Picture 1 (cartoon, rainbow, N blue to C red):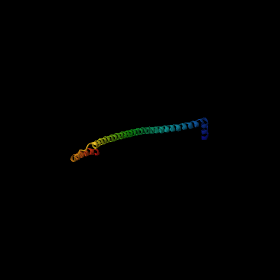
Picture 2 (cartoon, one colour; picture 1 turned 30 degrees about the horizontal axis):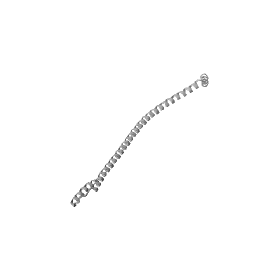
Picture 3 (cartoon, rainbow, N blue to C red; picture 1 turned 135 degrees about the vertical axis):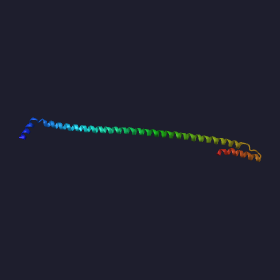
Picture 4 (cartoon, one colour; picture 1 turned 30 degrees about the vertical axis):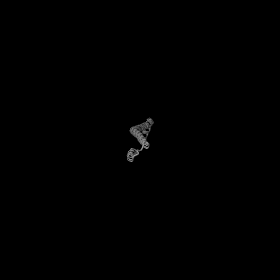
Length: 135
């Protein structure tokens, strides 16, 4: 009798079986959608943190590049200063050499006194003038 009752109920309410299946499928999909939304929110939070970290790293790299550019500019300025100083030293050395070359020519063409004591005194003075070029 129970089987007959059950069969009779199934004949009348046959549409409940597919409806229950559909309700179960909808409940499962609702659960999956909620799980996917939570996963998406966690991934978006991770992406946001990663983007902040990337921005910070880019700022750090830009600051380091600016520091390197400053160091290069300073080194270039120091090299240019060193070249200018070397040129100034060379020019000063050339001027001193030219001055003592003129003095040497003047001494070479100057008349030497005829007296021995006077010639020695003249030579000592001339030697003093010429030795200044070697300092």
